[in-house]
Image 1 (cartoon, rainbow, N blue to C red):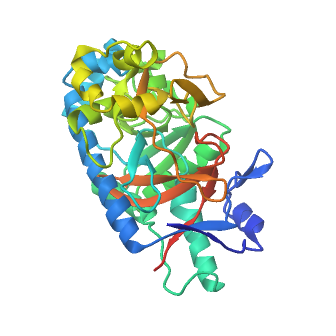
Image 2: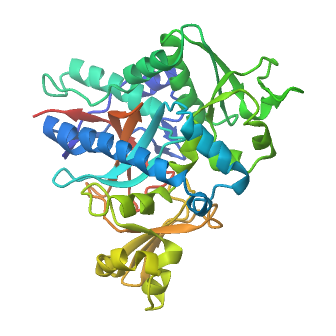
Image 3: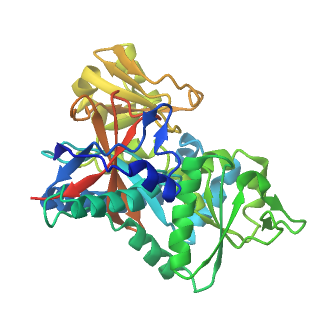
Length: 408
């Protein structure tokens, strides 16, 4: 894994504008940055990223099976008791999922480690699936990449096949996101593009224009009944909304399904560690309430985790990360080293949620930036990667997206 300096395409701004990539430059800085790119070998991609991410997803499904059978655990993951049955029923009926993005720390030399899994509302889909592929083709044509260079990027094709697998031709699928958010709309449009290519009908409505009929069915902005809805809106917020009481009886299939509420949730991480302790692609993790006395008061952890924590106690006391079970773009994340906070997010929007603690694993540093690998899961397999990098140790909303290629 190397970071390679490359010439930026001279018509980059025009190319971005031509395809509606309106947020390629944000907040006075580039979001899409192709002045450098990350190079991988095929073995690194296949053995260290693709295979492990697919295996991790299978482990996640085993964890879901356990969580939905335990009401106390669902409560601990922040699922309102009134909606436990909705989550469990969604899983029992095998409601289908489309996609998710695992965030991994990887430096090219050791096993990739799971930082978290955004399996409900992951963004950066357009950049990963489409724009970085266009970059690869342009740079190959310009002679700036080695002959035969490739990219781990079958994301769009996998999405098309996933829709074909799940839905009959001409099925109408509705798509929704918060209005006037360019990044969210790009993700939704990328998903709708795949659905249309798979032979589906695709209809978009802003989230605030959805309605409920007198019969309890969901309606779009033109009062059409919604049978299948892809919503780029997190389940934890949806379940807190009054509209949630209509979900079970609406007859609407949600993408992502309700059971993803326990996957796109950092409470998943301590469950995974309990079930698969010592797995090379996991970092030790615990619910903060179970181990806080042992970390900040020189006390004892909860007896239920005492033995497992004892095996990694020195590692945690040296450095750990505190994360709210619900958060986005690093919000609420705190790094603690030797008992002192050494870095913290300025965003406190999620501070009211319960927390987990995870062993700290530093991101590799390349020229002052720290990359996180986003491994895209489509269906049950890893279909490609996207990379974001940040100057800070906590990857936040001003991170940059970087293209990658395979050579050597």
